[in-house]
Image 1 (cartoon, rainbow, N blue to C red):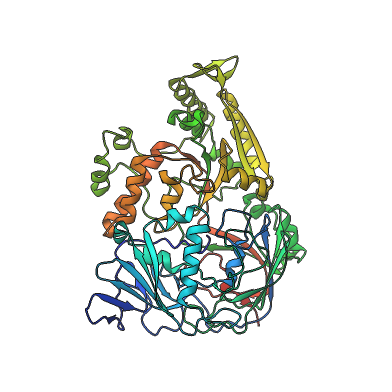
Image 2 (tube, one colour):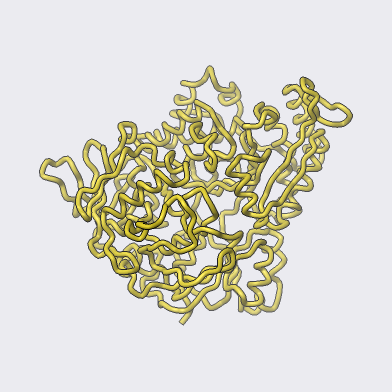
Length: 603
């Protein structure tokens, strides 16, 4: 679901010089959907500003990928699909990095929205076609959506919960009809604009629910030319790509060939870069970035180190509790374990002070719950005051302090006190639940893609847990085993990363919504079933103004923070990338981060 989620917010309106009204003046037809009522690119724009529309085409790039794959359908629960397969798929619309609350045409050339907000319609570009030359029609959109809902991963039924059904109006016109509650869901048109489209005819003899290692027919800029399961993928640029001259595609996808070689460990790819086996690599290990690139290749300028600034909300990297398990049902236990994690030591001794600590579920979004609640946020929270922890109203959110030995000792002392209040105490040196006599033991899972990077972080964490009587073990699992345990909720704690949109919306239901808590394969890995959280998510989704939206996000953040569902890790405001000095990219004030699809080979 890498490309399917396009999270945006509130008031949907359609303003442009070429708006068309139906005879009854009840439907607006537009060449964009803007959630704010304003948009950056006007009718007739040629390309996005952060793109070089004259970027030369050609050449080859080799990139690393991690883990493996055994399936090319990314929408089902079975198997592991490579995210790179989205290079072969186009979506109904496209949202640029410098206008993140507006969608512009791709497969759909126009969008329609009725005054009563009962549906969103897509009028298809008659030139849109699959890579075999067949036209994309409304039947293909209906087929794709219905199969994702009926046979795809259960999380999509949650994600599209406000959609009643999809209707074919004509061969080049479809409408998604909303349920009554969906009329107030202001991000639905943008979400649906991110729907990839499959060919109904191509799937005629296949079952969408089954895994396949033959690439489905797509309409995207690349064709899957060759592959070996779990080892490599080679994509060839489609010279007959139907959308190559559209404003939403001009200057993108410039390499004739993109090859992804699969590795089981991110650390191995460093040597692969230096030896020339790969062309570019994102660095995830702070120590490597600080020390491992001091060699003649880098110092001589053959390989470039770049810190590419982005304006994204910080990825929510964390140690997640599985609160389905009895030992984690008490918030005080979770908080005590949180207090034992010493980020300050890790950042100074392991990360070379390159990271910042996450402090919110929406860090770097501008909608973090900080200080005490006030204004509209306070008004929202007061509705639930009798059911909420009083500290929500009296205590500012804060992180554990470990600036020196004395602070760490005091913080661990607080952790023991919390455990005592939860019914635990030391018995033969072990923190034991006195009611049952069961010692508190924790297994923390990661996956092999991370290599040994987390081992260095985990050792002092485990030692601090030992000091408060908790026996903790850390296991690094192969990716397929890790995924299976995640999908079946077979873990105590797990290292996870949740993508976070700058405009949170429907995906919050997937992450924290009660209906998803016991659905195997869902994104609610923590197992949250909290009525107040559910209601606040609904407020976020149905907010009618920006002010209401921001207040609702802050209120949701504050309640999640108070519940101690996870232990925050760290983030960086830039993406650290090293690449051979044969590539170029547009220098722009837009913080685009690392998007290889806008790069090109130097002439």
